[in-house]
Amino acid sequence: MLTLKGDTALSWRTSLAVLLAACFAAQDGSAEVYQGIEPLMSPGDVRGLFPGATFEWPQPAWAQEADKIMKVTGPGIKGTIIVKFNDSRPAARAALASLNASETLADSVKEYMRAFWTEQTELTDDEAIETEWVRWVPEEPIPLTWLTGKYGVPDTRGFNDQTFEPYRQWTKRAVLASIGSDTTMVRLVEFQYTKTEYARVYHDKFGVWPYGYSPPEKGHKRVKH
Image (cartoon, rainbow, N blue to C red):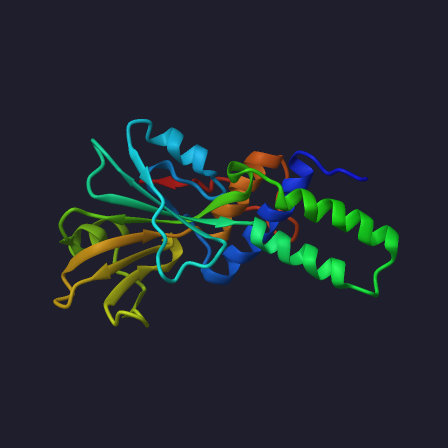
């Protein structure tokens, strides 16, 4: 049976991640990389950034099978860091089930695809789970002026559809702040990733740019917090 080990077997997930990033980060730019937690990192990568931290895996009521949440606390960390990961294995299992039910594909094609998807379902946690976004929850709410001083005036404002809490967003930096009812204090800050950041990390890992992505102009720099 055909085997697809190594970077070739993993590249479909990172390519998909870049496409997904374009869906929620239509405005491209230099995302804020919080505490060095970059896109496409594994749980092991994140643990390596905080060797003295405590790590928990809470399961929110909204979480689907592919959603993995890591809670990071410990000495020297002000507040709580929440890292959202995506597990690629549920999608691989669904693809394998769909393939097995197919009556239209040639046997040779099905054998090739079955070997690929089967291997994807058997990946380890550090191979299958990758970062999607990071959230920082301070011990006490912080002034919104701290963020406007760093990022400027937010370009988007609105209300959370579930909690109705107001928020402010800096789209090109992929930063969103959830604020209190008086609209002056921030209770949490969420750091997402632009498609540029996804693509840059993909390039660092595989040496090529993702299919369909136009590399940024020279001089583009990743911004770290």
